[in-house]
Length: 365
Length: 108
Image (cartoon, rainbow over all chains, first blue to last red; front, side, top):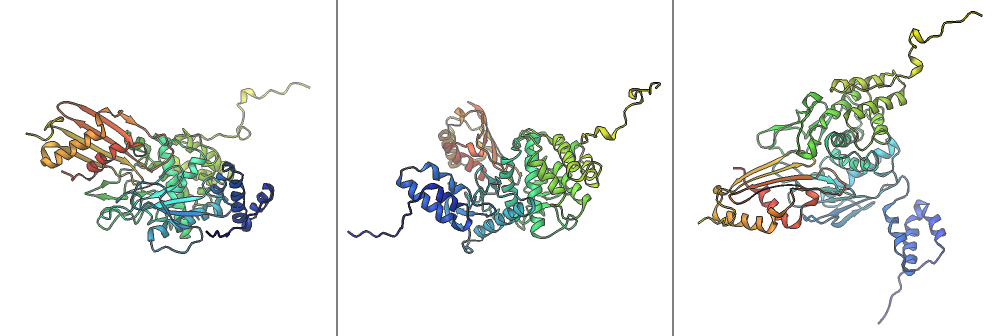
């Protein structure tokens, strides 16, 4: 029996590998060497976490194929740097995930969903004729659609952006997926999904269509998209699937036990608020309005935040970024007011005159 | 003689799938009297193997995640009535075939 020795095992102290791993070009080599030496010592734990991270500023996408089963992640079919597949779903998941990663890094200096280079995993061909896409807490998952009402769910960059943004929210505000906080969670995903589409297409707020999920419906459906951020409730009206139920104002808030308290329905209200702020401010929406919303999501919201809390926070952030009383802050106040939420604006004490009764009368010298 | 030995010919099922990325609900109403005897037999088999009447009223998923479906299933019959609300991520394996059948039932 012959044995072939194809590997050269480096046995160096761990700190040498760790220093090597800091350099992007040596990282793969270092990780493999560490894994081999760790195995030899029978210690797997330490290395198990390393594959979840990637060097700062480098995306690492992996696409899996579930083969129409519900087993996740499925078979790996395309890894970062691999050439195009024959499978259009695989390529769309890969490309649009890349766009999403690039957007967050270039626009907000964010390195993946956890801001620490988390590997980006996507599974396509999930289940059979599955009319959905979702984030499961660890990865993105896409169905093929039934081909009658829906096309494949990788077809549009904003769908991918929406799902990945759920990962961002999970690592930041952790908005509870229920009621108003859940509708805010959904809205954040639509906001950044739309911004990614606008960024990829280099569109200003005026040029953007503010539609979510265009291309998902087949030609047999009477509708342009799944949601309209500019005009909630107008995206579709079809004899089979019904009419777009989204409200655009608090007076039309939908109270329901379905859909976790209507998180995909009432998201229309904060969606419209963002659209109004972005178009009022003008220019590229990701630069100012998007920045306000991003800073709010990543530093100013608690998991139970409701629409009022989001309004208050975005106004405070706008004041912090662009000064109190700025056009940007006024646009944000106006936007929320127009959807029926009056932001509570904190007025700095220095700018208010004290009541006359409290001003001490000068005493005689 | 009705094939629905346990559940009775007046059995009524209300099925609703809500949530998901699209937020577009899917609703089906199934009346036993509208089914063929083969369909009735199959449905009863699915309800029995799902252990439907022993399921808790609410089954929530504890895993994080978003854009998953929620299912509401209500079965009324002579003998028993029961309703269940379940998150997609928490659907027990034995319930999957019943959900698939209900989802694919023709709109009547």
